[in-house]
Image 1: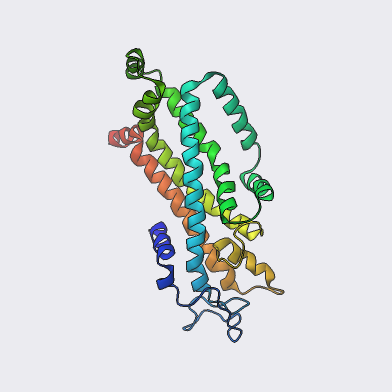
Image 2: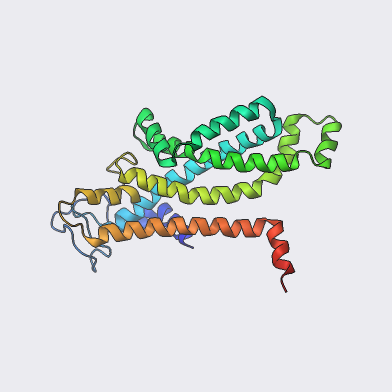
Length: 265
């Protein structure tokens, strides 16, 4: 439900937001939540609710795009590596080990340092940090099924590798891949928020939940509570919802868990 509401807010931001998120009102600086500004205003008099709604568009756009790009690459990489095996698989696993040796945020910051700031580079940086998990999961699924009898029969009949991977192996990998995608979505939201908070993410004046929190650093004294609480709650609920969606998908799509539930008295 939270993901649905955030998605609707992102799509219909122009109709949901009561004000222009970039319009400064110096007569309404740091106003607490009230009738005129439901979630208050910031140090420039910008409406917090409007910035939060438009920030959902940027944050979710970055998160969804990076997850689809990274997990899509991970799906193809894991499928190919698991099926081919041999030297290609060995080199792939060592490369993934190198990527996993860096914390995801540190790796993303290093990539942004080399690629420069901007929405496109943030998407690429976060996407590359999502690749190892999906690659490892898909590879493990392929390794567990590629020697089954129906795969051997198709191979004996002369089916080429591309047909085996696309028709017989890939469909079996979709369910676990969807679980990884939902879990990585929460991680991508957190990554965007953290990078923007640190000043290397979404560049201003664009609003995102991360740089809304980062803007609090501009406060010389104790920042108003609403500038911290509302973006923080939005980030937390979105990540929690994505993780719960991943757990629900795993329980629904894993036949072993279904059997366990069905055997309970």
